[in-house]
Length: 119
Image (cartoon, rainbow, N blue to C red; front, side, top):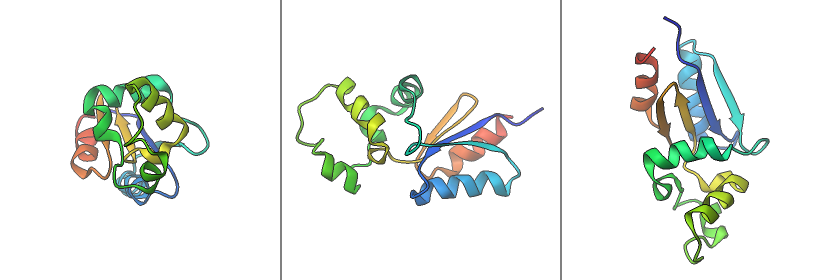
């Protein structure tokens, strides 16, 4: 059986994104890295993660970007927050990783292992 295609959505600055890249590379798994500073996440792709985890769980509430965005004080719809997240990926708990039907966010060794076991 072939390994699932692993997509890692993150930024080069994110240490957790680098951890995910390292995790898969050490196991000889080729990943598709989507640098969110170069290419925004597709709305449909982000929606998958929102459906699984909920929008609030995806937000990096401790991060500087969240503080600067004033999202905590804005009265906005989920749609509005999603639009903001697409333009400011630092608002997310990165990386977002998809392997087949398995999704994970943040540094999630167990989730990453599950992606490999699913192959």
